[in-house]
Image (cartoon, rainbow, N blue to C red):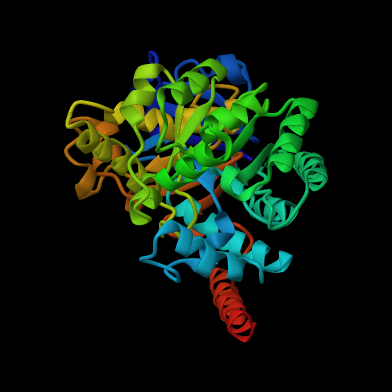
Length: 438
């Protein structure tokens, strides 16, 4: 489709990690942004005498068009456990409530639960996610059917799966669609044998892939890893040869100086998940230290079972606010840096370099932010408004790959929301019965 956005503001790349805001218009042709400007130099795109037949022209009415958020750590299908196993410490939460119910999930369950999660992503202005969960092909198919963009990594651990299966999933998912990709990974050191970790390292080197995993989420995880191997999870995975082609870790709360050195040397990304870490009392990640060290940072929501909502506005606010409290420094981790994490660094860690900003030739993964609402006025500083006072209510439109999937409360993903909600409730009721009987 050919879509013209006009009469609005555009959030464009600035110097370094900054942004600039300009009045103008943006054109989408098919999947791609083909023009950004003030409308006076369009002949460089369409020629002097050519006329573009627009499928739609969107009057932004002063709203802000910006890159979509990249949710860089998710377990999408965990929507089925939203508000089900709350107010528990991480280990009890995982082993007593989550793992037994996850064991009952079917591929068809995953498909419908993923669609529910995708709907929530769209309402929050999220245009792509970095997922780790079961049945990756079903996960990919749900995204493809909705028109959403999903990157996946493996959740391999000792409860199931094999390195051989991860390799098979890697090739299948990467070949399914331009909306679907797969990066090598495994669940965590504390759930995975050394043999499997060594296999993952060898596979990553074979296919030249980055590696991602849950890393240093809790103090107990790091303590027990040191007791097992005499090293932290970062040091162990580096020693096993995981990061020949980069990668990173989810959470990364409890890191020592050698861990930071490895992340810096290997160009690894730390993906922070502040709401989940707060709710599970896991801790507050040292965001300022990562920034001071020049280590890339991205932001994720984690799953709906531990968060409980997939809301990047909340994650952005917590990323900066918790850092200010942790460091006792109100000036650290400014809003501009946090927004850059949410839209650009997330894209890069997910291998989506063509989705990291608004620019001609980039993928049309973008969102429209309604500025004519009380929480976004006055417009003293729009970037700071987005991070400090913005919310899902400001997301007027979400476009992925040139297709508008969500607009003003309405979804265009090929599924009836009522059917999706009914399926999700039916799934959790069935699983709860199965666990009680078992």
